[in-house]
Length: 158
Image (cartoon, rainbow, N blue to C red; front, side, top):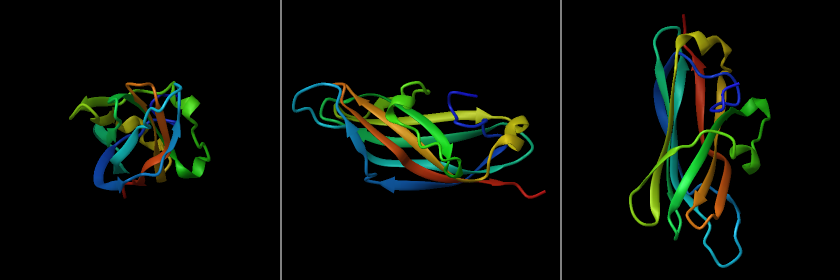
């Protein structure tokens, strides 16, 4: 099983739309004692996909994260709603990193992408999917969201 997906990788992907989620409610966890702030997701989006049988396609998740100490990094995993996986902050420590680029001393834009080919299309469940995120600030405070963004995967009609 790939570390970037909770089930076999997407394949034959066609970007249909982007769903933007503003002010996502989050659960914060503290790693250090003291009055540090908790990182927040200001906005996030994930591309909805249509699986096909030809070519290599790309999935993209993007978010803007803020913390008074700045953003150190983010971990991201996608999972199908009907799988009942419900990832935890501890599990996200072992998944792939998003690429975070600072836009200021306190804010970063983090992007997670991967490409897939047509061979994997038949193994990917269609339906509603979630994107789970674990954000780590420079002061080691963390915020977890099991559903930072939602997107849909559909099968291409023959």
